[in-house]
Image 1: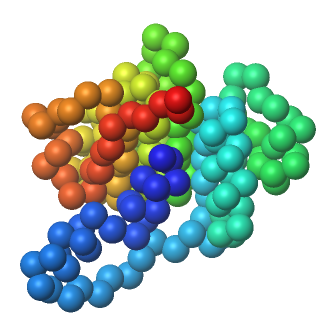
Image 2: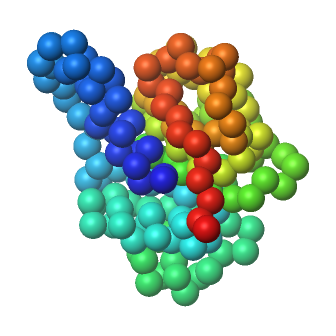
Length: 173
């Protein structure tokens, strides 16, 4: 799911689909992947799979994990780094950790991100300060936010932003 959300955001697919359905043919400049930095918060199986898939796109990959698999990082060409560095340097940030009762991405970390960055959260919604996300989207600091939601939320405060996309949280069964 993280790859799907990331590509939809980077290529503006939901917006372009809606515009095209109205009969308008719109050309746009995409956010290119080669030479950019993918940051992974959490480096478990899903994050390692994402790093492996996106390595072929020419992305530099940084990861933070409390208990990182150093052998996997080396095999995948992923540099392990402190959380603050991963957040600051990422053009694309993907969150892959279980909820541990605290926000991993608070407003200060969101403010420290590169201008024009994208965030994908396929973990618990509570890990991210959504008020901080909303301020960053409204101010143009974040280019987009994609999230897996635990339940339908027609009144979600981020729904008013074209740069917010969401999908139901899916679990492997």
